[in-house]
Structures are given as structure tokens and as C-alpha cells.
Amino acid sequence: MPSFAENALAGIKKHPEIFAALEEYERTKKVRKLSPRKHMDLTIDATLLKEFRAYCRERGMSMSRFVERCIRKEIQAARAAERS
Image 1 (cartoon, rainbow, N blue to C red):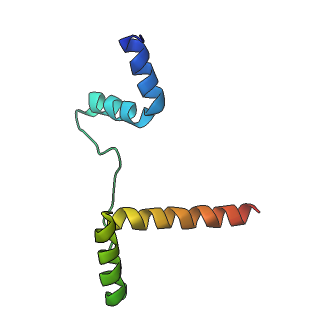
Image 2 (image 1 turned 30 degrees about the vertical axis):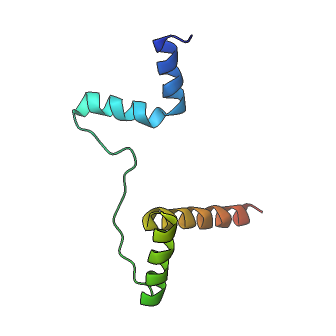
Image 3 (image 1 turned 135 degrees about the horizontal axis):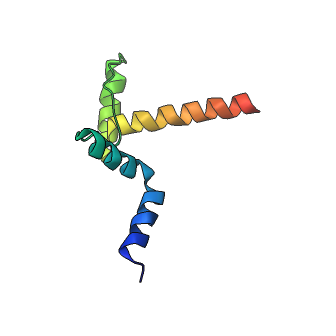
């Protein structure tokens, strides 16, 4: 059975961002969000927004997370195309 120290080191290797957040808290005594998010306003077609909202609600998904995934996928595709 792994010791506490071994489990702690494995956790640090698996999730270094959490350890960095704990170090920052120790230094500043302030807790920061592990995934900082920004608010963004968009203008899109009202009918499309209504359909998108229903689509996400039916599937139990966050509209923001869906948009984030699409943006990430688009950026990765563009970078892959640039490399080839």
C-alpha cells in the first residue's frame, strides 16, 4: 500500500496546477480559481441562439463549455494545417 507521501507526490505529478495554487495561497493568503474564466459578449442570430440553447439543454451541457470546445478544436485544426 503506497504511503501518504507517495500518494501526495503522485497527485502533484498528475495535477501540478493544484500544487501551484496551494503554493500561491501559502505566499499570498488568497485563493485563486484553478481555471480562470472571462465573460464575453457575442452577437449571433436570435433563431440560432434559441436552437443552440435548446440543443444544450436537451443534452445537459453548458453552452459556454460547448463554445470553448469548438474554439479549441478550431485553433488546433488551424495550427495543424499551418504545420503541414
